[in-house]
Amino acid sequence: MSRIYLSAPHLGTNEERFVQEAFSTNWVSTVGPNIEAFERSFSELMGGLPCVALSSGTAAIHLGLKLLGVGADDDVICSTLTFAASANPIVYQNARPVFVDSDRASWNLDPDLLAETLEQRARRGKLPKAVVVVHLYGQSADLDRIEAACQRYDVPILEDAAEALGTHYHGEQVGKRAPLSMFSFNGNKIITTSGGGMLVTRERAWADKARFWSTQSREPVAWYEHRDIGFNYRMSNVLAGIGRGQLEVLEERVAARRANAFRYREAFADLAGIELMPQAPYGRHTNWLSVFLLDEVAFGATRDDLLSALAAEDIEARPVWKPLHAQPVFASCERVGGGVAEDLFARGICLPSSSNMTAEEQSRVIEVVRRVARNARSASSVGGTEGAWTASVS
Ligand SMILES: *Cc1c(COP(=O)(O)O)cnc(C)c1O
Image (cartoon, rainbow, N blue to C red; front, side, top):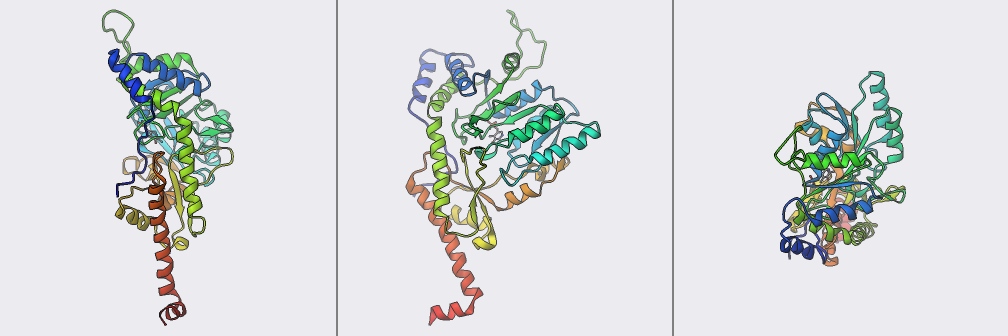
């Protein structure tokens, strides 16, 4: 039996052809037709907004924050329940992350807590320079309420939609409303370019600036002239070819990821203490990862027991993101709340979610989860009720 991965790349049919074209035409660096076509197709998905293909999602967040003017000693609010890459670029800009807790309805940035925080900071004259809103695991944050809070104090939003390609909010792809948003094409995301990212902006001039910074801020003259510090952040034309092919199959990938999550939910429906993460009614949750929350008393086993049982069967599963406010590297950062994110981290588990996971593989995962629950139940009837035990041995 082969290993079952958490979230593996899943190539379609045309990726290889686009990559081959890059080779045969010798466009193998950071300019070429694949980059232009990938940006154009992505832009169509984003309602025509300008898009800049970059070497990673992290690079996209970095340039996004720079475009918002985030600099030394600024505060930037960020969801605490996320991957470290949401906040690392804040520190690259010598600014300070302020971590805000999640709500239980979406697991994303709590709009009420955000509104309170902004109000208090406005009174102290210490508004943040920006808010990084993460759409976690393929579920949109509650953008209407988050935007309302930010607009009151004129604080711009950067949407971290790294995990949210295909995610809808009120019927629309996320990432189109904020001044800036970004996506990731890392190997484990819903589509991949092996590694890469996309910056999306509402301002054409910002896209031009980001493209300029991403190619070493080289002035358009014959010699190497620099008036600005640059970065080597542009996507390669080879990798953009993979992206072009992957974009063609995005809707199929979304359907497969959702089907995985709902098949798990169905298979666990009769088990106590294991629940799929909330599916907020305002959008389409891609369930990029199938994430479940355990109640160890009702389920009869802890999240870590379940992780070990899966690992023993060569099945890759993971805890929910460890909140950033609890990360040693961010220990000195300010935080607002954090109890919800800590609870989700303690009890949440991401099950194998690849769009190319076979039904047989998913059945193997389901069987392990059901066995852990069954053993827990029989163990508790042995230890708990003597009557049941004597009845079953006699
Ligand atoms: C993957 C991810 C990133 C970073 O994207 P890379 O392309 O890996 O640099 C940022 N934020 C979140 C929430 C992510 O999941």
